[in-house]
Image 1 (tube, rainbow, N blue to C red):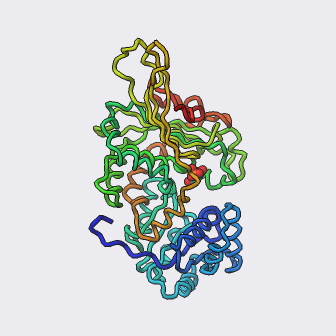
Image 2: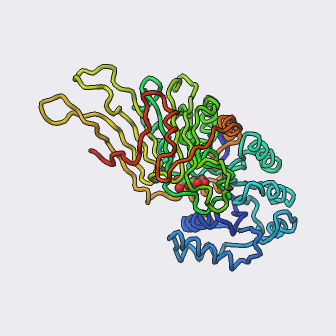
Image 3: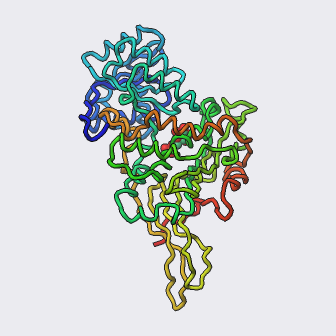
Length: 468
Ligand code: BG6
């Protein structure tokens, strides 16, 4: 959509496939209740599943899900329950889609959320197309968008056979987080950052997504995917896009996607030597995981962005399960001053910008200030701005509201997804060996080998929370 395009019409029915599944239970029902409460879901809400269930059972499951999330609101839930409909049936059976058509009644612009495994996308999309349910409709798909470039292209072809690109909403829930959107805002709503946001002032950029927990019963899914596909190729690459892209000319979908695409195309394809993969000890004993699995639960990598802005600045990424803490943080290290005029060593902590994305939301500026006293001696401090994450709406609530309204700005376009896979394809095809690491550690020691001599991994668990 560009500024000149007409505002898209709102969807007038919400359909979700996989209504009895895990994603619906964990994320979709709480988001639906929140949207009903905000008055943004005044339309039929149709769950579809092949579970042999009933509308009553779906209402009970919705209630259990929302109560489990600690978000139950009797009034909003009553309105949600009243709007819920249920269609049970095999996704390969045209009768299922005929029943869906009947449940949709006079709705003319449904939005269909495929909260189902990717292996079922094709059959459901075909069913929607053949039954007339795709006319003037939109579709929401969940990551993973394929497992490499070839499968992403095949998935796009499946979707495009029935839906035009502007009607496809690829959800990456990281883009629905306020703290992630604030990277874009902080960079481009202020003028002071731009002059230093480049290779002349930035030494290196680090993104850490650490999780102290393991795979929590998702062994069968995770063992097909691994850390690179689960969080790096999508969530963390989107974070890099917002940190590194040039300014979009407007904040609309076309301008945003085009700048991201330019950036992704400038990121060098990863070579095996750019990546260290790890697997925590005990992973192979998890239910659903192969005894001989070589899937990584940890990845450390360096990316190179071949643009005038970033040439020579490494972007380091680290993500893993069973690490010492749960935190997602960006650290932008600036270069040291060119000269020491106070007789101090210049190898102290460099100036930095630190963006804590979760669980807290903070923007911190690291600088040196003079200690009180006669001597011109300094100490490292941080100026900290904090947001209260509990006031944020959930990423799913935000993204579903945008999809219902037809705004693709916070979703991922087909060419961007394909450009992202292009970066990762070489290491996915020829992965470096997986090294084991102790649960609770920062991954294999070899993670340090992706760093340039003189650089060090930032440890987000010891970052000072507030120094000034
Ligand atoms: C999901 C991954 O997409 O993101 C999970 O599949 C991961 O493995 C999760 O734990 C992290 O999301 P958040 O919002 O909790 O940081």
